[in-house]
Image 1 (cartoon, rainbow, N blue to C red):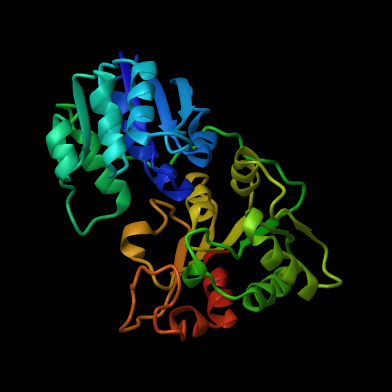
Image 2: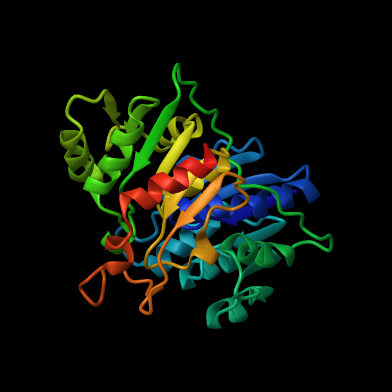
Length: 319
């Protein structure tokens, strides 16, 4: 049985789709998976043991995207079942033009027109549950949701290791402040090796933290890891301090004890899924959650008002 899956674009969203994917694989143990997604999502999920084919979606590159999507669909060919975790016209078209007889996606005007199952997920609900609602349409059996899962072996560190992740790809509104991350790292530098994580666009921020921690032994991996290496290095940590971000969900997949700092986003919808040692630090604000990339009011109090002492107190609760 062949199952075509269009993954979410963002790393964190792709990881949050894994319980639904694993549940489908449990019901269809002979399923051969074809993944389509962004470079980031493919690099994280292509190691699934049932993944037989994977493609980075490049239909936006050059020429007419509708024509590119049609040609890509013909290349993919018909599968037995298909699901898209993206709510996007070209994703619906890709499934429709693939010739797959049973296709599911989030309800929208285009999915209602093009797909057999256009699902409106229960709301409010965690994004993992929303993805599961869509996947449920592809089976008569009830999907049993487990934990997030990645099939990349975790790194094995010699000493207890603390990771800090000051970035968040979505935008500056989700980022706590480098000097506060540095203060937390300094507090635990005598008990843990320190690793700073970050993407290529977060190197400057990571360097600022490193320069603040002169005299403390640490490793700055910002901009230096592949997606697989990022997942592996996070997976082996003993403690992780992070903003609401893709790496936060990677840590949840490995059950890493985590303190997650939330500001403008819906913590009930995108918090770590089923990580028993996870604590959220956030402040109730009249203007939150605004879901904006940058603070629309210019004060960023949802993050600025969170003190390093609050994060340190949260760490003490989980160690």
